[in-house]
Amino acid sequence: MPRTTVLRAPARILLVLVTTLAASFAAGVVTAPAAEAGNLDNIRKAVQVTANQKGDPYSYGAAGPDRFDCSGLVYYAFRKAGFRNVPRTSSQQSGFAKRIKRSNMRRGDLIFFHNGGRVYHVGVYGGRNKKNGNRFMIHAPYGNGVVERSPMWTNSWFPGTLRKRG
Image (cartoon, rainbow, N blue to C red; front, side, top):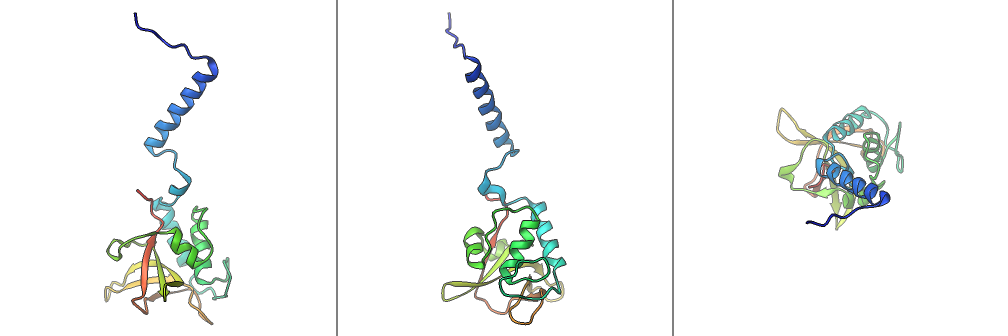
């Protein structure tokens, strides 16, 4: 006759909890904090928030809602879209985003400009210009600029994404 193990109430509750959590995790209902990044609806919302800031003035160190520096714009837009762990500076953001190939870029990915190994600027990828096929971004340029849509001005950049890793 097979032996059966009798679980006491606390052990049964723990087993049910662990089994339920594991099943939810496998079904994608629960996500790990590091995998928070990724929901495409959140990415779309971040792009919309970024686009809504066009015309807002540049201000060093500003993160909205009416003035931005480059990383402040990314920080503001992605946090408004539900990404809670996005770092504040472009350098930190470049380490946080998953680096991808240029050929794998999608709207809402990030573009990091670098010089001498140092990231100095970030923008949100907007896609390709319908007239000439060139890539464009929305960003907060230095100086007396305003948040705007513009082409890349150099080839010293790399893309990163906050799309779901996996």
